[in-house]
Structure formats: structure tokens, C-alpha cells
Image 1 (tube, rainbow, N blue to C red):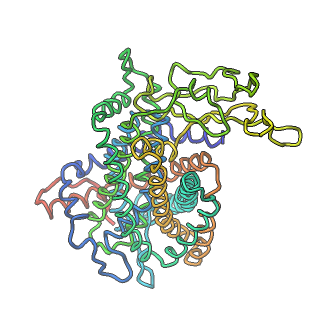
Image 2 (spheres, rainbow, N blue to C red):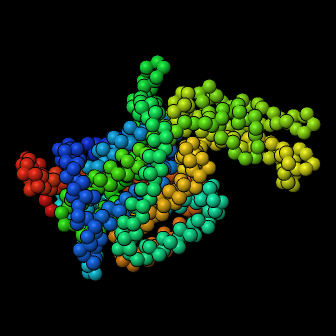
Image 3 (cartoon, one colour):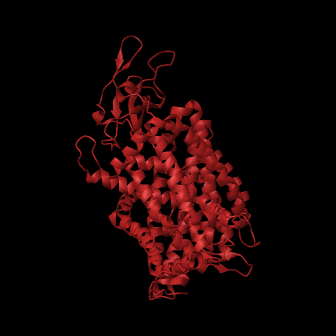
Length: 560
């Protein structure tokens, strides 16, 4: 894990963040901030279009189904667990930088899918084949970067296959299994097996069945989650001004006490905001291109607009709802002192504040039956990072303390009484609460004991949709590398991964996902920059045709 962590710290350092932000800014400026100038037009051409749900080609999917397939992949557990992780590591300010990444990421996604439609290919069977590897391969062939075309396309496709197993499958099935195990006592392997069976029934029907299923499940799960989130926000409406104040203060490292600016806080907020924003909407990774390429659309610019809506809905709406819930719900967790006064073998939640920067070794005692006391040792992390100083506006410093029962030489548990009801606590373990468990704790402040079950259902729906969406992405990439014969073996391995992923260590999965995400962005963004003149000229032509506005065409348009 140290190797993965170190690689991520390098890969997701300042250069990568600048590279990804530069791409979004570059395409925003180059298109005259199309996403800000024509938001209503984008809506009318996409989600509000009467023709968006019409499937006019038996070998393709409707525009809405294509977008749903892409959203099915992006609306995953990253919208819940990813946002929770961002707040835990980067504080409330990470939310602001997620918004920034989404604002500019809209145009990165626009560029990706415009080029994806332009360079997709028809097979002999009449089906569309597409993905970022196609515009990397065939787009760069007509530029000075021609020697890089094949290598970069192969590298991207290989990374896409790996990401399909990691981010698109293992992380999702793991989160779903954890949610069901915690709230319904469903064994992880049972969850994995059940998901595998359902996924098999869907992906074996090809892109048409995936698109049809996505078009049904995405609106359902989105409405389910939005209604629950709005309910919580309404119950805590008085705290919303403080929430948004904390977001903007944290984004720029403003210390509420001294008014100073902390470079470390800014770095953490920016880094985690971008990392989780990218994990959620995937703008810049080129992954959604494979789904959009199967659309029956003929105008590349309109399909690009679907990406603008996709990123907006995924991050600005869905991720923001999770963040506001975590920040607005009043935290009722006991203090560390209170939690340590009732140590048991069951996890006890407590709020770790800045005044408790370290848990005293050997502190409280467990009272034995006859007035005796049993001292125990504590095990704790040597340092914690806090989102805010007083812990009043965030769940990011919620911890659990669990007593570990002592055992004899034969490994049998030791008790302090003959009835074996009072365990001898040898030590305690302290763990940070993050991911879906953290979101569940926040939901419980409004929904009580039903919160876990409601959120578990949401997590499972999100995870399932992501898995079937990524099955398309990975399949297209595998076929690009190995040909049509690779499709069935890929599906078999993908389905088996759904089972094994349910039992994997959560932190290890996220670390690998972050690593592969960063590696995928490198060849994709390189190609986007090189092919940017085509994006600009196509957008200029569209604006002249639709709005009657003539803009100066970008030089060296490098038309295909």
C-alpha cells in the first residue's frame, strides 16, 4: 500500500492537477465558454429534446440511452463514498474544488465526445465501435504526432481495461457488499454472487440491453437519492448558510480564528476536490466516449452537449447533495472521553476534535465485577488531519473505538466473570469512519435507524449501474486491443471480478483506482490538446449554423 500511496502522491501532484485544469480551461476559452453562454440550448438539445429517446437505428442506442449508459458508469459509489473521502481528507473546501473541476470538466467531456463521434467506426455487422482510443489512433494519424498514435491508443485501451476491473467493478462491488453487510447482515460473497448473476443477464445482451437497462435505472436511483437528500437538507435548512460559508472558507484555507492562510489546507482541499471530482464525473479520462459512440446521433456537437449535462448532473447536483448532507446534519457523536468510558467489543462512535490530538496511552480503566480494575493498552494512529478545528460542521473526524478481547494461549477469549458476560479488553483499536459508513451516520441524524438501509439501497443501485456501464467501456477497449474474440473472455473475467471484489480491502481498491485514473488521463489529454483545433472549428461552425454567430475560425483546424 505504501507503494500505491507514494505513486498516487506523485501522479496526483501539482503537475497533474495543472494539466487537467488546463485542459478544461483551454477548451472553455477556445469555445468561448460554450457551457456558460448556451446552457438552455444545451438542455433543449439534450435532456429536453423530444427526439432524445427515439432509437432510429437497430444497431445503435438512443441519445438518452447513450447518456444513461455513461451516467450509469459515473453515478457510482464515488458520489457517496468518494465525496465522503474528499471531505475527510480535504475538508469542506474540497467541495468548492469539485465544483471548479466540474465547471471546466464539462468542456473537456464535450471535446472528448465530439471527437468520439467523429472517429467512431462501423463494423461489418453495422454496430458502432468507439472510444477515446479511436480518436487517439486515427485522429493523431493526421497530425505531426503520427508516430505516437498507435502506442498512445494501445496504452489508453490497456489502462481502460484495468480501470474497468478496478474503478468500474472491484470498488463498486466492494462498496455494495459493505453496505449490505452492515445494514442487512448479507455476507459479502453473497452480494458479489448476486451482483454477478444480474450483471451477466444485462451485459450478455450487448450495448442495446445495457442502454435500455441504464435508461430505466439511472432516473430511478437518481430520484430516490435526490428525494432523500432534499428531505435532510430541508430538516437542516437553518445550517445551510454556515455550510456554504465553510465550503468557501475551506477552499482558500481561511482560518476562522486568525484569518491566516494555510498552504497545506489549500493543497489538501484542491487535491482531494479534483481527485474525487474526476473519479465521479471522469471528465478528462475519456471513458464515457465508448458509451456515447453507440448513439444514433449524427451531429458530434450535440453529443458533446450530452457530456456537458452529464458532468453537471453528476458532480454539481449529485455530489453536492452528498457534501451538503455531510456538512449540514448536526453531529451528535459523543466525545472521545465518553466513548472510552464504555469500551466494549462493539464499535463506539466518537468525535475527535483538535483538543484530542492524541489518545492517552493506558487511559480509562475497565471496571471489573468485584471492584477491581483492568488496565488496557490503546492502539491508535499517530496523527489525524482535521477538516475544521472544532468538529461542529463536519463528519470528517468521526472515529470508532473497538475493544479487542484478550485470549489465552489456546486462542480462547478471556472473560472477567464466570457467566462470561464481561470480556477482558486487552487493547482498543481506533479507526477513521469514511466512505458509505460516514454517509450512513450523517443520514441517521434525520432518518434514524432506517438511514443505513435507505443508503444501502442507494449504494447498491449506484454500484450496479456503474458496473454495467463500465462493462461496455472495458469491452470496447479489450476488443480494440485483441479483436472481437476478446469480448467473451473479457465478460467472463469481468463477472468473476464482481464476486471477488466484494471481499477486497476497501482502501487498497481506492488507491489502485486513483492510480489508474491518473495514468488514463495522460494519453487522453495529450490527444485532446493535439486535436483541439478540430473541436474549435466544429463548435464555430455549429454556432454559425444555429445561432447565426460568426466567429473567427481557429487556424490550423486540422480537419479530418
